[in-house]
Length: 181
Image (cartoon, rainbow, N blue to C red; front, side, top):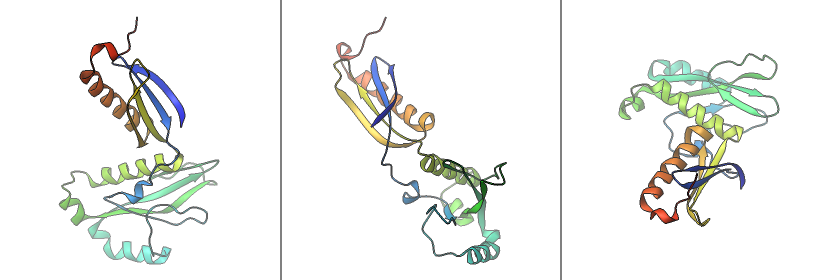
């Protein structure tokens, strides 16, 4: 575990660390289906599409789908988004993410496109290695809580760590909390 940052919150020490073995978010329960084609990386969901069969599927079902294109930028690392990158040499479209309108209704989604964008953002954190965990320590250096698998530093890891530190601060007798001047 490589520590990224340490700070104090509510009298407790929070350590944020790089999670070197996160679970691929495409293995979770997702709303969208992410289909990608790349010669060097296995990206997105497992599928049996060819480029042509995916194009046929989209063409045949376009009225029943919410769909976004997927673009990849590859230069010393990779990053993904639903809009083209400005570099024509190191980027290009690699696939699509889609969700049926039926699924969006069943899930009660107000903004299915935003849900797909969030899945892309989450996956982008994963492929870029923005995967974190946290631990919370009391004044004795004892670990009160620890958890990994957060994709995104400020989006998820820090917020969750602070929320759990709030929980522990309320639960612990005051003599176990750190004191600061």
